[in-house]
Length: 577
Image (cartoon, rainbow, N blue to C red; front, side, top):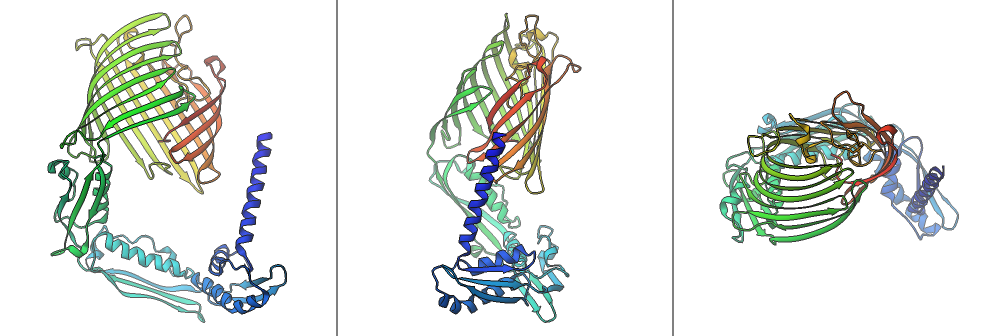
């Protein structure tokens, strides 16, 4: 109840602050539009602006000018015949008040929007919806200008640099209450790309730079393709400065040359940071990166993460492939130590990964690694050596990298080992993850998550802990401890399961652009049989979209006490997809 009262008090204070700000912004001129016309009210207020420090006599002299501003504001939204009454109220200070009756709006009776020339047959030339300037709609000067600008911008984006409006009129008859819209755009020919050239400081081989270029000479011009080249180079990590110039003024024979000016970045950087989650508690993370070692763009780096239950360090050497923005060959080595619940392990890894992006934007990773792991599960000790070929596919589609409003992530990883190939166990390991996000209405967000995994083996005792399944925690089933959901041995020690099933649905209610309330339902477990019971967790939370990414604070109740469920607080950060 105390929390509810505090929230209510905060809401009252916020409302009071906003109301005070609005009243102050009104100054000495107040416009009151009669009826339910919030857009007219806002536009008229904005046109008049804030007027302060005027006497009553000064306000009378200002009255006719202010009225003309009010009329102009209403005309912009289609109301050409308002009835306006004004008066000055005495006070300290005096106030000029306009009472406005909008009258009948002017409506569109005829609309002609036409593209002529080669662009009329270009499927890429899309001008978008025209419903806001359709016959029967109230005329809106801003909407008309928006459609005109949209056509012009689309022409420039697609290289119709000679295009122009041969008709561009908005004809209004206030007495009749009608308006006609005519927009006829003649495109002229579409330009194409010319040669792509580089100006650089010589740090990188020309062949590497050319691998970033996906534009072909003679290809139809597109500003999006120019932006894509700029993005590919900027995001490569090689360059401190990238300038891509594709000026139509330099075109010859309708071909636009592309000139790229590059300056290499500082080759090395060191970063360190601290974080916290209820899964692992406080943690330290440090990275050392050498973005380029030689003119072929090879790179290397190392990173470490230290927390109470887990410590690891990895190092890698990476070679860019063609295209370098998506494809690479990476060699890596790492060491990790874990002490979580009833499992202790030390793992040493050596391997390589080939990363490739397919034509439909799936990332494919083909790997081969050797892992040596010494571990203790309960009172049982083990030692494994595995040669693990792997294949993974993943895809992320979002409308914004930091705080998407819709999107999805799909991932599938398959790993195996065979006793006849430098391994102490026969293992076939599969994990699939699907996450989705959709936003409806005024910011109402729905998230879903499903994770399924399984391990096939002829002797489960030979499977090391890193390839067994555990559930529970911030990113799994909330209301249960980190990796506490698992089959147990005769002594009650968690030993990991053959299968993993975990899912979640979550609803988020927006409070502001950066703050949201959340309600969620989680269900899952790590099990040895698909008929084993699943654990359920429910709860409420708060989300904050911080400058470094979303932060999540949850209060969850694990409903299955026999599986370790209880009231728990969960704190974590990172992307929701």
